[in-house]
Length: 338
Image (cartoon, rainbow, N blue to C red):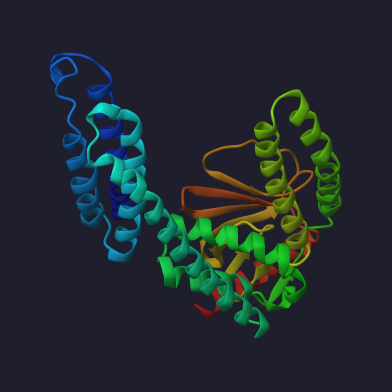
């Protein structure tokens, strides 16, 4: 755990360095004080050294994967050039005018690379789904081969899962998922019906709000709000479709917790201390996690050892007692084997 935390902090150092030099050099260039000889010594090469020499070196030092380091260096240096175009006074720019033009080419190349990567991932996922492979692994494995494991891969996997259930939900069946017994949660307290209501509400209000903001505020504000609303609509549609397809499953030695399109959680049966029926509202806390769309959770699980700081899990399933009985039976079988 300490190594993971140290690596995570180390990977964020280039971004923190960019923020630091942006603020400090911004203060240097924008003010008139003794540091810059009261505006006379605003030379661009001072910021240039930090932004285009120290920053990429720091990326390669802090990030083990050289491919990721190169991509991150290109992105951060492009941001640094953008920041420099604002903080460096116009009369002090000599090379910076060329860099400002060059960054657009760099961004275009980066987007082209990302598009090729996304297309590769898409084709791999589509092929795996056609072969009736485990959907979660069909999504995560191509991404992890490309980016490795980490927060970036988790975010991209979530986004890919959104598009997968938005476009290819009909190609996925609950029986394809890992586990011997599968349990649903979309019927409990009308969870899927509520999601359908939100979808209709968002779809109806989208054109009305767009027209109101367009004439009452500005076309730009209307486009921004409509774009964000459209993304939330796509999220709800994907979530609605995933609810009835993506189950919570029990295997011989693990529980696979899947809820909507969010990343799954795998719990070893050996790590379960207590599993029982639950009634009542569950307040938010740092050591508990709720998997429940509507109403109150009906299953409580206490772990022997915390899983990513989580000790208590609360689930809302359509058949809570059948789930509990199945978990307890598998736990008893595993104990008898030992």
